[in-house]
Structures are given as C-alpha cells and as structure tokens.
Length: 513
Image 1 (cartoon, helix red, strand yellow):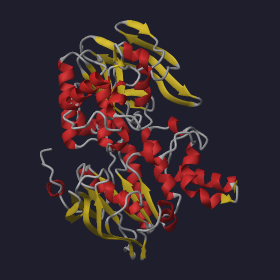
Image 2 (cartoon, one colour):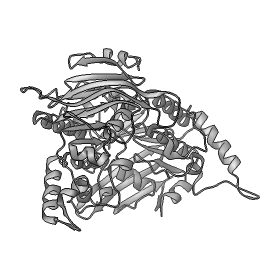
Image 3 (cartoon, helix red, strand yellow):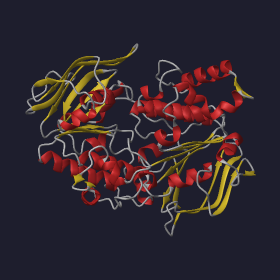
Image 4 (cartoon, helix red, strand yellow):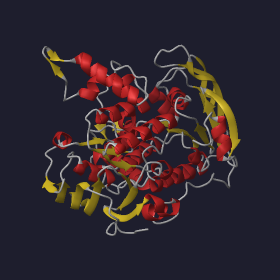
C-alpha cells in the first residue's frame, strides 16, 4: 500500500496528466499543486470528501475551467484547453455529477446539441434519431429519442448524460458520480459499458463515494483531501479501512437511532394515499399507502428505483396530487393546501434533485438559505436585511456549510455543501415534519455523517424526520423504523435491529446484488 502517489508501479502509457496543478477562488484554494496521471485503457477511481477538489480537477482536465497554476500534459506535450469543446475535440469528455441537459429539448437534441449531424438539406434528424436509439439500446434503456428530457425521471436523465458522452467516441472519459441516480440494474449496465470501453483502450476516470461499487471496475485509486493528493493504491490493496482512513482520517459511521426521550403525538398521518403515474400510464405509483409518524421519530422509507418513494414524498409535499386518501399534519387535513401553505403549516421537503428543485443557481448561498423563509423578513415591499442576515449566518453555522460566506455563489460550493444549503433552507422554516428524498445523493462519507447527525439532533428536539433511500446501509443508521416500499406499497416494516438481508429481500432486491 502506498500513502503518497510517488511510488506507483508502471501502469503503462500516460495519456493525460496534471502537473503541479493549482486552482484558487479568491482566498479558497481548491487545488494545491496536484499531480495526477491517466493511463491508457485503465480505470482510475478518484475518492475524496465533498470539497476535496475532485470535480475541480476533472473540470480542468476536461477544459471546463482553467488552472491558476500548473500544466496539463496530453500525449507527452503541454496543452491549454480553451474550453470543453476544445478538450472534446482532442478526445476528452466528461459526464458531470450535476446534469447539464436542456430539459425542454428531446433526448436526441440533447445528445447532438452543438455538433449536429448535417446532410444535404440541413440537420439530418433521422440519422441523429437512429444513433440515439443505438446508444439507448447499448445502455439497455427503453427511451424514445423524441421524448423531452423534462419528462424523464432523474435516473433516466443520468442515462442520457452518459449517452451524450459516449456518442463522442472519446479516448479519455471522465465520469463524475455517474451512478448517483441510477438503479442497481442500470449500474450493472453502465459497468458493462465501462469494461467494453476499457477493452478498446479507452481511459476512464471514475469519481465515486461508493467503495463497494468502485471496486467492481477500478484498476487503481487515488484520494484527494483538502486540495492535495494524499494516497494511492492498486485495486488489490484497497479495503474499507484504507478508504475511510485516507478520505476522512478517522472511522465515521452514520450514527444510531437517537434515544433518551419519548415520541410525541402523531405529527404526520397518511391514510390510504394513492397516486397515479405522473406520466399518464395506467397504474398507480403509490397504492393505498398508510403511515403515522410521531414527533421526534425518525422513519426511513427504503425501496429500489421505481418503488414509489419519490412520488409519495412529492405528493405529501403538494408537488403531485393523490387520487385518493388523506394527508394529515398535526391533526389538520392538508391535501387541499398549496406547497407554500404546507410549508407555512410546518411541512418541509428536501427534494432528490437539488439542482432542479432545491437551488436557484443565479442566487448566492445566503439567498438560497433564506428563500423559503423570506416572508418572515418582508414587510410590504421591503426586506429586513439584518434579520435575514442573522438567519443566514445561523444556518451556515448549524448545517456546517463550507463557504467563504453568504455572499458566495451557490455554484462555488461542492455537491455536498450545496445539499447542506438545501437542508438548511428547509430547516430555517422551523418545520414540524421534514422529509428528505435521497438526502445523501452525491455526498461523501464525512458529509453524509454530518447530515445524519444533524437530523438525529433535530429529532431529539421534537422534529419528525422521514427520509427515503435506496442505500440499505443508510436504513441501519438513525432510523427508529424502516418502511420498505415495493411497487407503490408497503411490503415490510422493521425496527432498527433488522438485518440488511431482510430489508433487501422485502424490497424485491437480490441479496447478492
């Protein structure tokens, strides 16, 4: 095992490399003289906490941003990419963690946007559609090329992002958390694609927070921590102890169910809630779902992709409409209320897709944090700036957002810190019930532990917490109860002593998966 990346064995030809690359944003040093090699036909997994500099390094290597100092070496020669198109023309593509699709355009148009296939009469839409169908078949995804992206679920949008990168026929492919929204089946298909690309000599950089997942495909791994590269190891030498020690420096866990207090009255009651498919298909995504959650209780809703978890939470929050059933908040039936009215009554939702539904990219960190509470600081046409600033500073401190201040651009934060902003925004509304849909999507092990600790602390103060997840390990953390969903219904209910195998079996998932 090697604790610094200087003593690597010979892994073959280096096709792309960073040499002493640094990147600064004002007083924040995202990268501090990083050396990083990408080898022909190899999969390099890059680990690191949110804010460690992983995405920054990959954006530099793919031409999205420019380094403050250092060199990029391509095929043995120093290069400077003007932009991502320049890098793509040289065979380097990146699949971003945060989707960069145009929701109003079709799948086909997203894949070929900016590099349309031209024919004698203009754009050859028929050929673009044919190639899109071929890409979808290769990814084993039944998506019509003419479907608007906004009509696809998040996992399918991730597949489109992957297909767009594959369509370029790159020789160096960077994948930044490509599986964060994929089902287990979709992950397996992606891994088959990666193995096929590797056999053809394509070099792949794979950024992940999931050790078990990454070990299925990686040849070697490196760790970034606080903007510097701190560890390297070949696949045979990587285990959980190596992973945790080099990423966070100590043994993190996600905690245990908070105790030492009694639950209060029922805070949220769902009675026979049924939700039809939002896309118009003739079936119910949630089918006669009933559940009571008490003040101070933490309930985890577990299920595979498509189980109905997201649709259930969005219905409770008012984003979708139930065809039957009742949603009762602290004794008040709220099914007729708007989203804003439900928030005012004490119901909050942290959505699965933070970029689309949780953040306003043109706003600052502070503006995003105070957005859901803005009515409390507004009198007539004027905002009470001091009160708003006090809330912003308090939220940054309580949810431990790593930022230069409330005036920083939201896009300057790592994915994990952006997620903390979304959680902080909803906690600032002083909810009685908070629901979180896949709260750890794209969050590293350290940030994940902080989020779960925060939720446990708020539960002790009487907050009813409901979170959904497709990661069975997250069920066995702070939840007092685990509700397993399968095809829109509750298939099982467990307490915190249940085994991982029983949870997976109840969800319809193979334990071997």
